[in-house]
Amino acid sequence: MKLLVTGGAGFIGSQLVERRIAAGDRVTVIDDFNDYYDPALKRRNVSALVAESRFRLVEGDIRDGALVTSLFEEGAFDAVVHLAARAGVRPSLRDPVLYEEVNCVATIRLLEAASRFGKPRFVFASSSSVYGVNSKLPFSEEDPITRPVSPYATTKRSGELLAFNYHHLHALDVTCLRFFTVYGPRQRPEMAIARFTDALERGLEIPFYGDGSSRRDYTHIDDILDGVEAAVERCRGFEIINLGGAHPITLAGLIERLEAATGKRAHLDRLPDQPGDVPATYADVEKARRLLDYSPRVPIEEGLARYVAWYRQQRR
Image 1 (tube, rainbow, N blue to C red):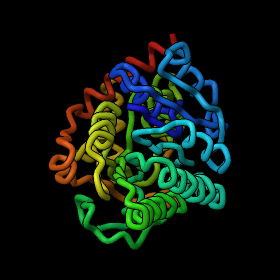
Image 2: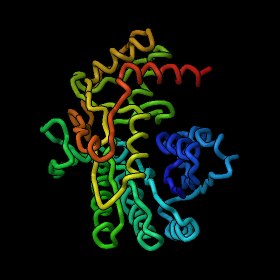
Image 3: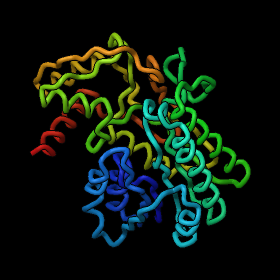
Image 4: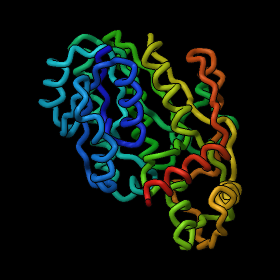
């Protein structure tokens, strides 16, 4: 298979690329190595792949229409996994225009190129953030999406709608995957588990928002990658599918488990709830089980232990 992975030097993308190279695919990655977090971390993610004959790295911006067109003209891709995005709820409050440009306009450029050049299967990385303030738990793909509470969430929902447009108008096969709080080795350093682990290991305070009762459906990277690979293989028509751990835990519960994984006591910096945050996320994964044979297999305790071990190895 010839595969294009956008954002392929990042947390999820680099590990997906490693899997697909090992499986025998030819993979092209486009990544702009922006400074949302240290670009050196992303370069390290793909450093071992550069020598692979079936790997090609294109350093560029997916907002560049001419570059995107040339990639598809030359690539003859069988499938596209579109992971590149401006991520994060809180940063999107500060620069919503940038989020619109990267997450919506650039997505149109990719969909347009895909529709013109071979119509490869198209897997779009969406987010549980699209559910917004949704009192019904767990979140189902059939729930109405009418109240996203951040520009980030809004752009991800827009991406899904754009994807449907191109399926409807151009018969493009598209699967939108709503990721639920992915964690694991290489995760972005500003994400909760990465920040909390670093603070615990260094004896620093942990930023603790609200009363600790907010809940998140943390999903280990290996489970997400299983779902993405299945979606690439089975992408037909148009589908929106949740990928989550299906076992949400509270913020307080997460910190307790990290204390157990590190053997260290947390010092909390208590802060008010943050604008744009939602009280809970919880994935209904029945559709993923049915269409992708998806079954999350890494419980949070095991996943945190793996992450702490990886973190300590990196520090050494």
